[in-house]
Length: 272
Image (cartoon, rainbow, N blue to C red; front, top):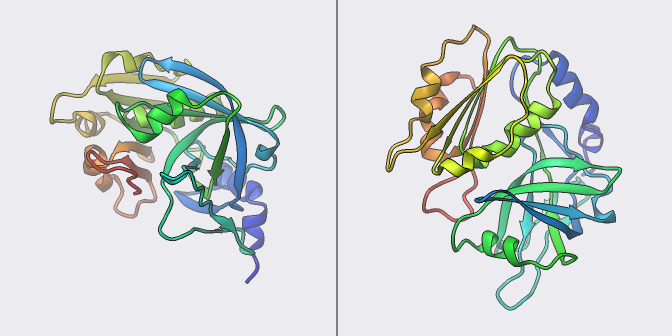
């Protein structure tokens, strides 16, 4: 079975949905597996590392939505790399058992410069954190994806973003790419004060509320429900699965919200 034409060239469909779409729409991309190199490493905050990937392997990347993501594919303990293989549907066949992967939001992609930035939250002792902080510059990396967009319109009267540190790259990219007259509330809850140093572009009409998470209790959902927002507001929520769970009732049809658990406490490699 060959690929659907929309998967081969998704850019027009995503752009049309940004302009005229009514709600959330999943738009598939042609998925590829790429070998790239580690071009640079920079601490954006003491707990957030920006890993810049580069090289000709980035040619032809499709990414048009703020929370598009890729998977980094890690070798097995014996050094064997079992990467997925693209098929004729422009999807991926993954080996079994699944290799170890971790999923990261694309903060920025520059096709001309062949550079792709991933901002990684560093968890002490985590596989990805250990790798990201020690991998040599110039080392090869295998990445898969992005698989597609959870596209939402850019014409709503107001937006609410409810995120923890893992959702900040998506919010930051959205601020870079959204219309200049956008109206939004951004509610950010982090575990540590220094995580609020993550840079968000200043925009007229955008209000940022920063919270520090209390032990064993998140205030994120409550702060969002307390906002006074106009009818037609679109909600984007991303972060720890249980912390954002109370927001899933924002729209029973899910047409007025994009809500994704990026991770779950105590679960490695969580996939919502």
